[in-house]
Image (cartoon, rainbow, N blue to C red; front, side, top):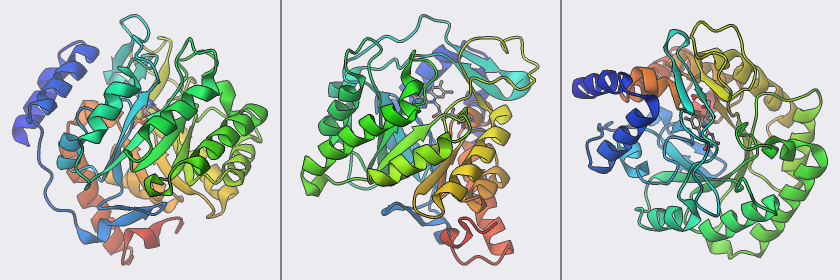
Length: 347
Ligand SMILES: Cc1cc2nc3c(=O)[nH]c(=O)nc-3n(C[C@H](O)[C@H](O)[C@H](O)COP(=O)(O)O)c2cc1C
């Protein structure tokens, strides 16, 4: 783990996208850390999927499903790969990823760079049955039928992923977030539910919707109602924000989605709104600015069954996962909870 701390510091000296590529290469070569056994108090359940611990790797890190096994070994309770689109696409021109070191934040405008569904499916097909791996699916930028792209993703990956996430919240594909509005969401979720119900029951996996934290008044209720109406299991709350709280870094005005510490307050507030509107009828995953056991615990007590993180890894390295888990277990015991599930929503 000390070696990995050194590696994290060395990677921080590089251009952020080069550093990410190098980290993926190292992980593919088996150079990742090993997390060890999880404390049984952390075992939990996300919409019927058993998790050894509730700390997940958020999508965007492993876009092409290349290193999920290494990240599970490093101690994550689950890994979400993607976003994958039907066809490979290059994404936006570089530079498109910025480290806001002073703010412990990241801005990205990657634009769904990925190698497409065939490559992604090939990697997932080789996975061992243990370990929870979710598939986050999206639409190609130039697609004439964006809703059709999500349906294609669901069909192609059916039976290969532990769960699916419908990503309608990236700020970096123009118009994508409009799929969160009432009529568009009805059409999207309606067509996905129809496709799902026609697929073999054997591959059945829960479906989540990933939302932006930048929602208008009333949208939380609309999204909850549509998710329930179409049999979704839950909501990932949420993606990066296009808002800009006060930031110190010179990259603060770069276009894209902001993640990391400055997103924490907003993401926690929107999670609370979803918890209230869903009233226990949907599983919720808290994402955005989580960088400590205290952050993770607060999200769980606010109603999240599990959490995910990405940006904090950039600054803290892979040792962070173990620290969060140890702190979570300590906090659960100190507050008298016998299991993680007992703390969900226990404000
Ligand atoms: C470089 C980068 C790429 C991302 N790519 C995706 C993506 O492809 N799909 C997605 O749903 N979220 C993506 N995200 C968003 C993260 O999954 C997460 O929702 C967000 O970063 C907030 O969590 P964090 O503050 O822990 O990073 C990306 C984030 C970053 C920093």
